[in-house]
Amino acid sequence: MAQILFLRLGDEMQTSIFDDLYQPFCDEISQKYSTTQARSAEDVKPLLSAPSLKVILVVDGGLTTGKKHIALQKQLSSYTQAGGSVIFCCLFSNFSRPPDFDRMFRSFGLPWEFGSYHRTTFYLSQKIKSVLGHQRAIELEREYSMKAVHLKKTPVDSRVYVPLEQ
Image (cartoon, rainbow, N blue to C red; front, side, top):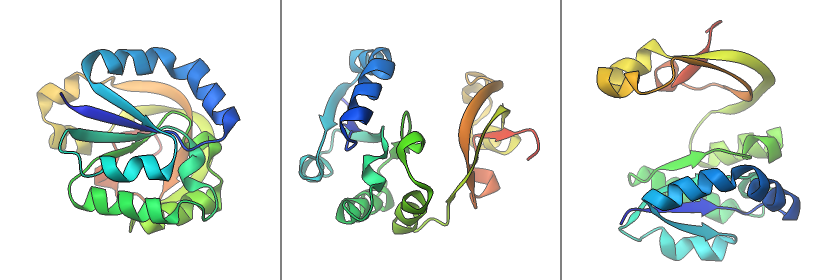
């Protein structure tokens, strides 16, 4: 069975908030996939080479905390360069400081930067529709409103949802 790793390196407050807000999300994923939770860098390393590992969900800002997890950031970068998938989601941007966020993405070889934080309506990118194909694209919501961190310096053709002004 495909395995999903929840990477949870945040402090007690982040852990508590994640548990309160995202338990239904975790339960739904656990019904379809084998899931593992890693709460330390040492927990992650042996899992990176597991053939059943399909995706790593970085669900809080712990990975970006200062210089504490630079070695793990480099390991995750190597994992993605070898074809692995890492998704930054849930509380990630809420608990990432902009300088730490920027530094972490540079360790992945990406120029992405922490942008503005505001609510807007996002629309499914026309460019991504051609990448996904018509059938997969129609399964996604065409638009939604969300308060979010807007990334800077991301390639236009890599954006799944974009604000109207883009």
